[in-house]
Length: 271
Ligand code: KIV
Image (cartoon, helix red, strand yellow):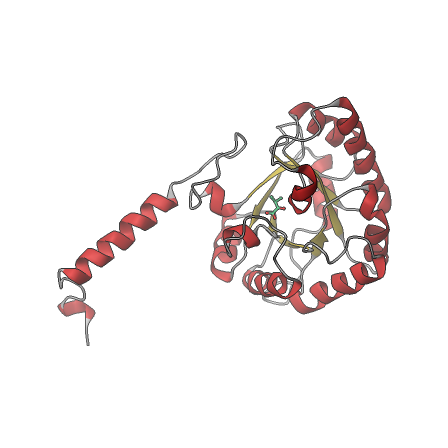
């Protein structure tokens, strides 16, 4: 539901129609009220409360440490802000793998406490039981294949996935299984464009890419990366739309200078 109690305009059905009509889906991350409000105003289709909050918000090296309580806090802040986009929340590492009963109870908790619209989980055949159980509770699930950062210790690197035929075939099989299990959409991360297009052509549900080429049904980026707030992360797929790091640095330096020079506050800025 939206801030005014009306249903949000981007639903799972609307996303399906967008794919059928060839209309690309635009998705960005947000973890806080103020950013979510701005990107809703800009007309974004989906806001992902990603577990990348572990990196961007909390400074962890991987996404693994973020807790369900922290994800719920970020999701509540975003949900409070938005009217139109669908809000999808990442289920954090350890809340759905290996135990489908635990998975559904954690999924219900996030949906109840954050009032999210849908959840996202990483993985294919290994987590299909959990996916089926969560969907059977009436919760829409978005899948995530390719580079799945919650498995970084298994992969060992953040390199491009599914370059070899065997891994590409496994990814395609997993994508089909997730669709058959009832997922409403799928994220593909850092894979060859040709594999991304093959998956998007095979599946009826929308496929949203991050480093998966232009042949998929939509794109997702981490907002802090595309605005240039983060600097240390520069993969090929990242288009920077601004250099907010430089702008913010300049603004803060100007503020410090004005305070030190006794120029701030001036006569008009005091009571
Ligand atoms: O957590 C996240 O931001 C994500 C996107 C990179 C898809 O999962």
